[in-house]
Image 1: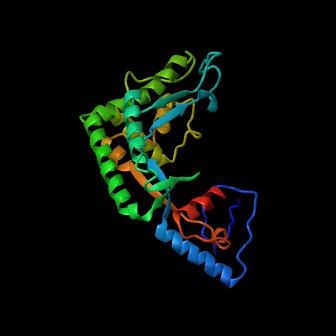
Image 2: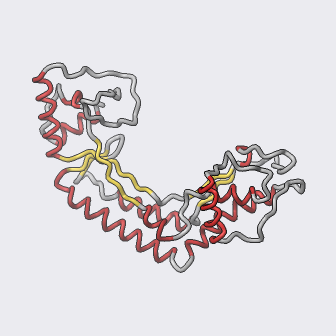
Image 3: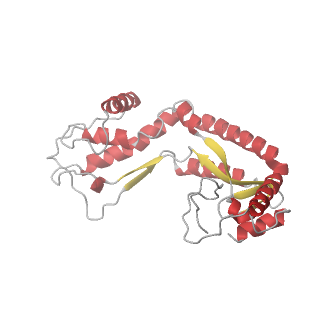
Length: 267
C-alpha cells in the first residue's frame, strides 16, 4: 500500500510510508462509486485511533551526549544512561490500568481492531464520547487524590534530584561546579524562566559554569510540569478519526461491516 500524496484524496495512515501503488481514479463513474462507498462507510462507523497523552512523564540523562571535559567528570567503565520516571512503579501501574480500562471499551460488539486502531460502529459513537469523558474525570480525580497536598511536587523534586545527584557523584574534584545541598521547586522555577528568557538550550550551556549541573537538570526536566494542576491539564484522551483514499473504494462494494473488515484486511 502506498501513501499517495494527492490533495484531492482523503488519506488513511498518512504517517506510514509505502512502496506499492494503487490505480488512481480516472473516470467519473469510478469516482461516484468510490464516493458512494465512502458515504456508506461513514453511515456504518469510523476509523478511530486512540491517543492518550500527558500521563507518561520521564527524562533520560546520558552524560556522554555532552561535551564535558574528561577532567571534569569520571565515567565508570560500566556507565549507562539514567532513565528517571516522575512517578514510582506502583503509581505508574495504576495509571496503566486506567489506560487498559479505556481500551477495554472496544469489543467485538461495537468495533473491530485494525492495524492502526479501531473501526467503531456508528451506533456506539455517543456511548464512546460519554465513556471517555467519564474515564478522564475518574482518572483526574484519582490522580488529584494521590498527588495532592504537595505530593506531586515531592515526586518532581525526587526525580530531578536523582539526575542531579548522579552528576555530583561522578564529578571530579577538578570540575568548577558547585552543588546545592538540596533542590527547591522555587529555584527550579526561577531558573526555568531565566533560561527560557535568554534562549538557553542544553547545547548552548557552558560546562565551565559553576551551576552547569543544576542548569542541565532544569532543562532536561523542562517538559514536565512542576505543579499538579498543570500536569492534570495536559492529560488528554483523544479520538483521532482516520480517513481513507477514495482510490481504495472505487472497485468494490461497501454495504456491511464485513465489507469494511475485508477492505482493511486487504490493505
